[in-house]
Structure formats: structure tokens, C-alpha cells
Length: 353
Image 1 (cartoon, helix red, strand yellow):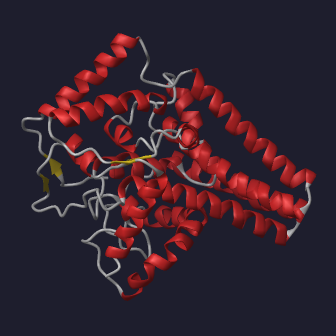
Image 2 (tube, rainbow, N blue to C red):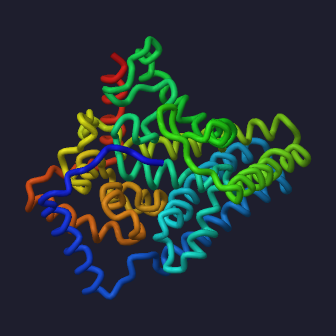
């Protein structure tokens, strides 16, 4: 994958100053930039919860009312594994051990996705060209218009009514349709270039897809039947989809962030300033939410330093905010989840007309 879009690399004083302060923080505190004991404990808790919920739903089969609740919890657990384990491992920030990062990043394949596609779409395209239409494929949401450069269509006028439904089906659409769409066209987006797809990754793709289908569809059907399987998968998928989509959207698609139109393939700002302008934090004082989301409510810090584990984001948050004040750069942070969500809704409404 390649792009002609370039960032301003002249007089990058802000970036140099911020990097120096962050490096000084880790030097002074004798901390590693990767995860610590807390993230290993969290990973163990989430993977154990996955195993327990799956076992109870398939083999114990409690009363249907209890099963519905457990399916919703299972969906939230899938999202939490993505936020806390796969995401850091996919950025090689979970552990100093690269092999462990590789193994844990494949938890995405366990959940039905594909880590090779994710790294191309997320690590490269999204993290480099955030909120730039045609480059950041994470803002290419079917049936949605969230960037002013995207074509306005008739159905967009209703997107403020149906967006939650789209978020609800987004996870199932991703693993059962969009991954196959990428596989056969070998493109991340409609307008993007074809990507290289090694034979090894093709084998992994089909092997993991088959294993996921057996684990999430075949085995449940054998033990609980078609209808309970479809209902359970629908509930878990909806909860997971809404969780994943909402967290991403509140981090970038809010009225305070910038959606730039790129002229002559050049971004006027240095890359770090562009990240701050196109990214927002929310509810950073909510420790429970921070734990569940793997620190992705500290999205600004994550986009500036994706190779640093999320357990360090609260400490980095103070350094980044202070440096932004020194250079008179607006730092976007919502006090609560509700405030961020309402801002996101305002964008959806504005882009519907």
C-alpha cells in the first residue's frame, strides 16, 4: 500500500519537543514502553472470561433469559479482548517479546477477523492518514457519510436514524463479508491500490476463518440448535459491533476534530499536529471505562505513540496536554462518554445534508 500524501517535515519543533519529554519520562521512571504486570493480568481475566462464557452458553445451557444476558456479556468480552489484547499486540506494544505480540495479535483471527488485513487498514492507513478521505479507510463506512469530501447520497438524509443499526451489524458484516471482499479484490478500499498478499497469509486466512466458523457456528448449532445459535450470535455480534464502532467514532468523528481536504497531496502540518487535530479523548477520568477500553479513550496519546502500551496513557496525557499548551495547539478531550457521543451525533446530522 502506498500514498502520495505527504506531511510537513520542516521545523517540526512540536514533535521534537514532545518526543524528548516522553522519552525523558520513561528514562526517569525506569519504565518500559511496553506492557507491565497489569496488562498480563487483564489478558488472563478476559481470555478466562471468554472460555467460561462460551462453555456455559454451549454446554451448560442455562435458562433462556440468563443466556440472553450472557450472550450480551460475551459480545462485550469479545470487544474487550480486541481493545486490550489484540490492539496492543497488533501495535507490538503489549510485550517486549515480539513473538508473544504476534501470537496475541492472532486473537483477532480467533474472533473472526484477520490481523494481516487489520494491520494494513489500521496501523498503516488509519494511523498515518487519519480522517483524510480516500486514505483513511476506517472512515469509509458503507451507507454513511462522515467526511465532507464524501459524496452526498439520498439515503444519507436518514443516517442519524439508522447509524446505531449499522454499528450493530458492523462486526458481523466485517467478519462474514468485508474480509472476503478484501481478500478477493485485494484492496482495503474502493479507490486504494492493490496490496501484496503472501501465500502464508492466504493459508492463515482460510484456516482461521474455518476454525472461527466451527467454533462460533457449527459447534453451537450441534449443541443448542439453529435458532438459539442465530439469536445468540446476533446479540453478541450487535453488542461487540456497537462497542467497537462507537469507540472508534468518538475518537475521530466528532464535531471538534478536523476532516481535511488535501490539495496537491500535501498536509500543511507536521504529522503529530495532524494527529492531534483529527483525534479526541473522552472520559479519561473514568477508570472503569479506561480498563474496559484498553485506554482507547486516551486516543490522542495512542495516535501519537502507538508503539507505547495503553497502561502508560494516563501519565502521558499530562505531558501531551502541557506541550500542546506551550505550542498553542488545541487538545480535544471530552469530560464524559455522553458529551463525546452527542458531538458524534452532531457530525452525523451535519453530514446528512
